[in-house]
Length: 94
Image (cartoon, rainbow, N blue to C red; front, side, top):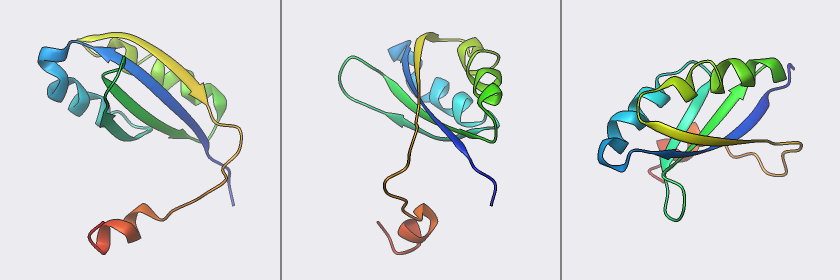
């Protein structure tokens, strides 16, 4: 089984265009989910790729260039402690 690199990207964006910006980010290959969040951040994106270098390709080369993205901070996950099958959870209505 090939490993997957997971990066969590904290995003500050133009609040007046949040939905549009989130949709554009969600369309980027390598971005698995985008969440609107409360607090100092506006969006949180989950990036799942095969190699560490691909994180840079997704975040620096694409996500940061989405019009309306003001700043990002990227955290790379070292270890997974819990894996939930999201497809299964959504199929039962969670």
